[in-house]
Image (tube, rainbow, N blue to C red; front, side, top):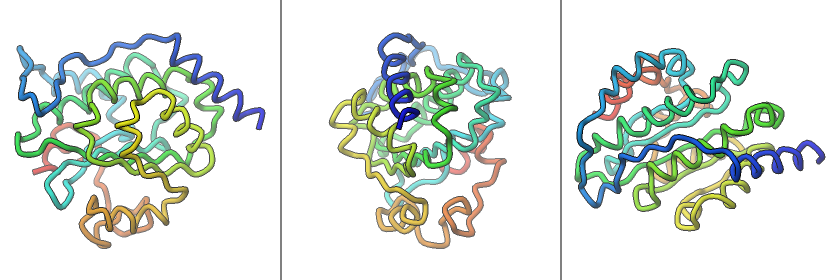
Length: 227
């Protein structure tokens, strides 16, 4: 209980006091405003190779309506080697590289967050990561861009969800479905149409489908998985 209280206090204080470079170039897809000049995302990826090697944040496949799905696997974050500035740049590049290239007919995205496999102590040692990621995501993906999100919380991840509710707008929070386990998440993702059928349930959710590292650890791979 003391760890939980310390965790919440640390993260909330960080969200109020820490600044972060937020992406300023994404405008809701409904406005059809393009950034000028275009960014060289592949060059930025080269400069962030260590971050991409974690494979913790990536786009993989589309749902039944053609909307892309973003996956966030906290268990792959390699907490001991985090460099805050580079981690936030990595987050920005992954988000923006796809959002800016989304066809005009696809104005929404899905988001699957796996927050069930980490220690609160990891976040306490890196208190800026959670709030900075949330702020970057909210800035890049306004609520009209998010179609739906599924969050697997376990025990400690539910604390993070409570913090999300205190930071994110209600219009975004209302699109989040929270489940406690991956076993529950797998059939739910199929039912919601985020995953096509049970044959596409990934190995880390108890299925047989492999999210290939060649596709999850590079921008070109992520983009090819969305074609």
